[in-house]
Length: 333
Image (cartoon, rainbow, N blue to C red; front, side):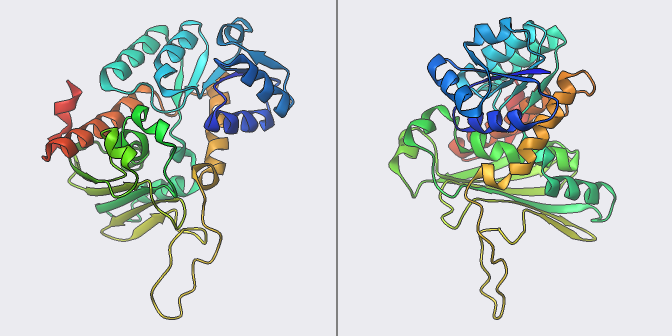
């Protein structure tokens, strides 16, 4: 199987290394707008194919992974889908609702499978929690707490094009909540704060955001996101039910300490970033994509899923800016 990869920045380089090591891939072709960078990356990984996006598509790949800059995602996904090639795209599909909706429609018109990069669906802890919830072990949910806490902020240049903390960070929680519960968000109330670097406020963003979501069945969800969790990278989700509680991401590497006497756990090395925290999940999602590209499985996370998560993020940003509750219907248009 020949797989193409477009974009060899931070996450693209990680995907390239994972793809190189996956069984079933006979040829990995790396492309980037900077062709010299693509070739250097190919040399580093010991793979033979490298060049432009046009050259990649001309090489007849079986599937293409897109990890290029956000503002190129919609056009690249469309080009690959119209070439009849299965496509995997890192989130977001587009930076706003109209662009995402248009891209979803264009891909759907081709009949080509699209898989979005919501890797938490492939994390063992998230999968185990979903099974426990769906089995009835937890009873009915009354509350969920989900946090995405980065150990340090990204470069200042990244923030203006990131879409803001709810679209960039919390959107993973929004997708995971839908996937875990099978329920849709109907209303949000969100706030944000800036106590760190000035470049967040200068870009109209915040470095910390919280939201209260109401699901269609009445379950209440609190999401927390920050760029300044100095103890380490912390991604957890607590599912609180009428019969029990399940916690995702609580391990010996969780970056927290207890103030209770004689409690020394957790004592492991804290996660330092998303690639460390979700190493296994990133490999699993690409393994699943190979099945999609081979025509042996449907996409486990399509464009419509990306759109639904983005609706929640859009509603949170609107709520934060206007200081009011926002119904999801308002942003669906």
